[in-house]
Image 1 (cartoon, helix red, strand yellow):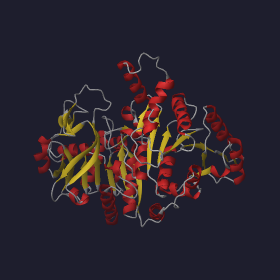
Image 2: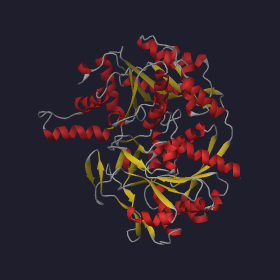
Image 3: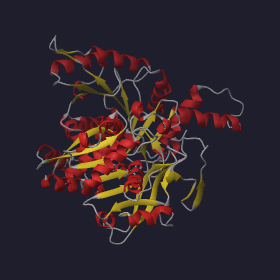
Image 4: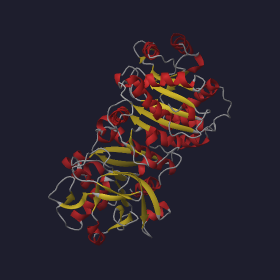
Length: 548
């Protein structure tokens, strides 16, 4: 194990969840990191996912939600998006692990003979691999917050609970803390909160040898002090460390809510640390804007996934664009397949902006193309992201350039492949090569790539720079051989890779605001540092609303 090389000041906080899933462990972890930062501490956040997929890259977004991508090309759980948005600390491949990766590493070592003939078991081999992940690639962090995915009691999560139990023993309780997020259901007919699910969840955690130090109790209504006292007694937790986690007006109110409840104070007292009070001014400013917007603007997101979590970073980036403009963004979720059936005007006639997000596969593509045509012809601000940019190019080729069978080889191998499979590109000075039959997992152009913007372009003005870096996640590219025809049709390619081979940004000069990008700008947007493209898009939508 790596404890001998570990900075002695680093404290580890392990966040688990009980009773039911989707209580908000990721948001709780991110909020705790934010308020610890507000006290002057350096933090790091990590996610340990018990599922057996190597990463979420091949998961259906309707089941698992968004796939978040880091600068180094790691495909990770959407909670890493919360981590980055709340802390501003960029995550890497060292901050996300799954059981799939852990077992893969163990088996690779076994095949190489690294275990010297030992019988490979969950304890110690799997648990040691998890420990190595938790303890490695750290520097001078004051706190490392590790969120354990899933719910206590899940069979997949047992090795992780055993690991953090061992770490608490090996590092000492003076350097480790357990926080357990649980649910207090409110029964309207009885008019009371029920503590029994929390009691059972803590009891189950104790069966794994883990005694929680702080309980975060999700509740729809305030928790009476006598109920906190009861929970403390039955769960063996100090009363002041039973923290109410009430529903908030927005997720950006949560750090302040936890601080008011004393979460950061209790963490500091537990570790015996004296620190200044949390400076939450930036969170107060964000809350003030969201509570008192100057107006409201309606933006349609024309997607194909019914689960809104599939577009989590996107929806938050739109909120950030609204905050920068002191406007509330009302998102109208519009199914691309509905547009295919009933036409774009039926859904998009009263919106101020149209956003076409990323996606994979043929379903809903014609609806997206119809939506883009509606935006182009009606002069509605239009923002295409990744797949949305590709559909915007195809729409121009079909309806302006007159290439009726223009399409993508991802969907139709017989079409005029304006968008085709990308088989090779440069990455950090080396050539990456892919084929049409390569495994799906990890074979895309993933992570941060540089882009050079054209002088005088709208994109260059928005970024106020000619060179940018953005995160990618895609397999197909717009074919540059159509650049001249696109230009004749009013669409300019205004951003390219440094070698000029890969189109990154398109825009129309004959339109108030029409931009498509091959990358995912939403992944880098933060409430206190909104992405400039979203700021500009929301501003264009506001200007459009004033014309109506």
